[in-house]
Image (cartoon, rainbow, N blue to C red; front, side, top):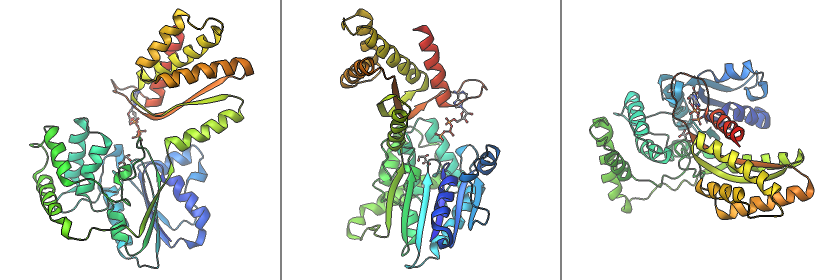
Length: 364
Ligand SMILES: Nc1ncnc2c1ncn2[C@@H]1O[C@H](COP(=O)(O)OP(=O)(O)OP(=O)(O)O)[C@@H](O)[C@H]1O
Ligand SMILES: O=C(O)[C@H](O)CO
């Protein structure tokens, strides 16, 4: 068994694979963010670091999630390893969010610097991760199913930690083991619609044009069938929520999953959680006269925040159950919020969300 791994979460995945497969692992290469191993050591997470006698080479690169020379070196090593395999070999491809930047291998003549430039231009123009990865899939060898093709005739099992809302495997880390259901024409249309045609490098545009033309003649040619590859999502918001729900129950709470796909501004989302808490408390306080003015106002606020009427009704029932059983409620949610970083403070999206929730609760 050969291991190839790339992404922000793969150090621990590598270790878990080593613990299960032990000596069956022939060799492996993992591309992880700069400083990952040191971070794990500093916080004593030895169980998320490769074993002492590990056969897996760890390469650190892609500072700030931008593809760089080290990540490219890792990608080329992974390419050479996969290219040398036979039908007797099995590849475990372990990947997670951040995998796109950690496995950069542009088709020549597109250069690494040009790839980084395209990524920057599209993200600054507000392209979604699906749009950005659609473009990457048409410009890079190992993306858009490329990893599975290079590894053939070896069998490939992709084990994936999703960071993409909706968990479509063709977009997580740019779908290295999944069929590519996007077209080069879609990339050109996107570049046009974002108004960046004139600043995207010429080599990139001409490659996309060539690919778009080639795919028009593809109908007669047999398309690659991906018979050697399987992709399994082993981590996602939904899975995390299920586990959190079980844990909350074990800790003596009444858990309720609000959503597995929260999106939007971190502050607005934090405030929404505070409103949910206020709504639950208010529902509990007004069991007898359900039409209180305050309750109606909060209900309206929640619906305006994007919650459905069904969710609001379910939360009312939850409040009743909580009163009857005297068990406190635990509201769970997952997704990906966004933050506009201002100034040079420290923080993260969840911290900003939690603080916004705290401030709003204080108001209530
Ligand atoms: N609320 C905030 N206040 C200040 N700085 C922030 C805040 N949120 C994020 N940042 C800064 O922006 C950087 C990137 O944030 P982001 O949340 O995208 O991190 P990430 O964990 O790398 O994301 P992901 O892995 O989901 O792509 C953080 O490392 C931090 O320095
Ligand atoms: O690496 C990537 O492409 C993003 O994190 C989405 O998976």
